[in-house]
Length: 116
Image (cartoon, rainbow, N blue to C red; front, side, top):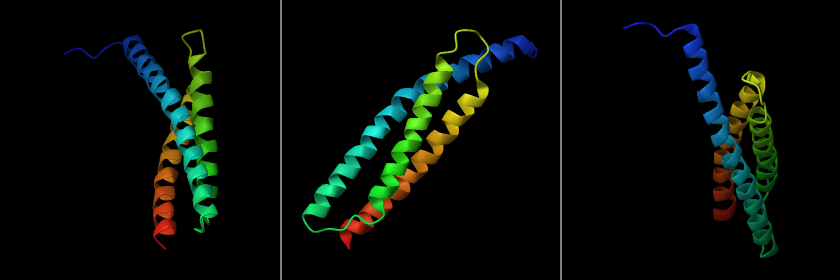
């Protein structure tokens, strides 16, 4: 089998980057809503006597990370020429992964806070 030319590999990588950004943008935007819903539910829980503690702070910071991922992904998609902003794409990827990890940690904190 022949190795694809460097141009073919670059085109394939650019297409993959564009698909990744198209996935990150709406998912991260939706996750901002999930975080805000979680904060609202925690505040309802506080009103009925439970303590949110660190959980609402984690979710607030997490929503900011998802917002960074959304904006970076959107900015990368708005490039009209073939030259993508690879640094912005990497920022979107990193912010999305860190935000998902923080959301998982927040879920554990919420579970612990509500069961205590």
